[in-house]
Image (cartoon, rainbow, N blue to C red; front, side, top):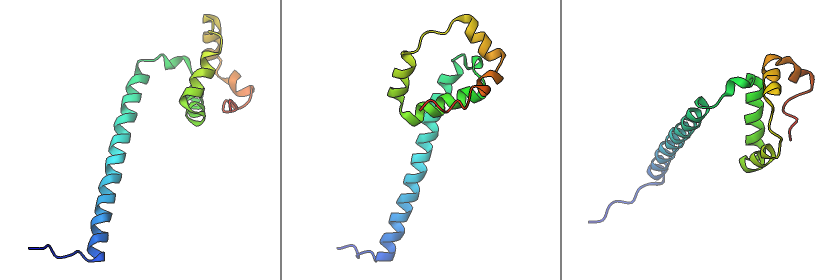
Length: 104
């Protein structure tokens, strides 16, 4: 017994349903991955940065690519304890120096 051949309309409906399911699966996987990254951030001392510095740092890192960003950051000298506290105590100073997104 042969199965009757699907019409183009039925085939299109099946494909669209699969496409919706695939989009939902992509979004579910994306949320799970971002959740894992959020858990990593919870263990880091991000309070040493202003919210703007944190956002700009992540955005610039993502824009240029993780490997490039890591290489560039590793080449920087270690910040001393006094410069770390000075940055977080006076967050306006970074705004006077220009946009933080000019790292490109």
